Image 1 (cartoon, rainbow, N blue to C red):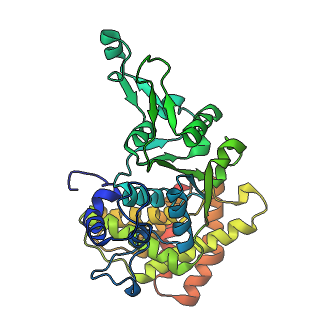
Image 2 (cartoon, rainbow, N blue to C red):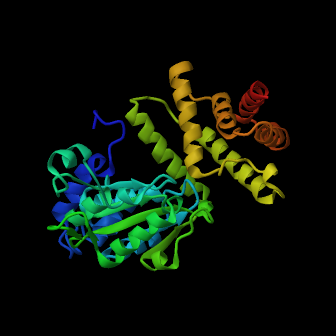
Image 3 (cartoon, rainbow, N blue to C red):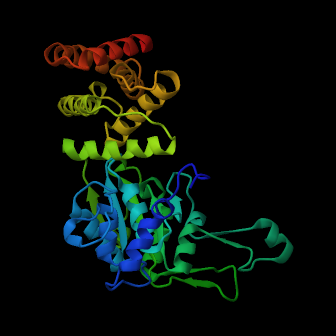
Length: 370
């Protein structure tokens, strides 16, 4: 893991997965490495009632029903589509599911406007084709085709950002479970082995970009992941991700609970302001997601570690928040300036604590960017 900037879940949690597999005696669908119950434990963490002789920590924070429905969908060999706003943990849940089911979460296609049918089927090694002609040896399988051949999970990120012809190519894969290779005379069909399925993600804010056809929708079971609104759950997510960052960078720095509360409260205030805004000009361009909170905190921690006194302070957190959220000038700066004067300033006078320093740090950051 020391040689990886970011280890995939099956590598990062290999010891846990080995342990769960060693004690798992429940029935497993297809060629799954873990039973549905053990997959749920791996993702949501163990409880006393599970009767394990070691603790399995929680890795994804959300309603248990979303995880259970996702597992049941994949056990039925239907495609799974995780849909929700940015920062709701769709990709992380998809990675954890693939890691627990087949110990491989890296067979991923990233959906963009430039994604082609080749990216989900196959392409050719041009030099080998010139030298030896078209053959299975000169064929380059896509991550999805590789998943089919191995009988494991393939992933498709941001499905609605890919064009309609790419989406349509998935229909036959999900329904027929094979890919034909018309360029070859022999050995020209790749059949999916038992255990193959696709976990796709889609951003609900991309609606209207490349809407899914009704035919493709029928091939997926939808699981909608809502925005985290519970402050306790959101705090757990932010703390979990931040602790991962500290371990990865080998940074020893305490995260004061008071500063985490200030960050959570600030995002809650800004979300409320965005919800009551009458036009897009009165809303921050940022989605104000949990993922963006994590980004703000990570930025502040790294700045404190490399350029500060290795203590996270409210002023640094405020500067990071303004710098991360002020994407449009002057619109976003005006919104943040209004928030600082109308909400942060009264709160700093009323509550004291770290708020006055947070107020001053935000004021300085806004003045610098204005």
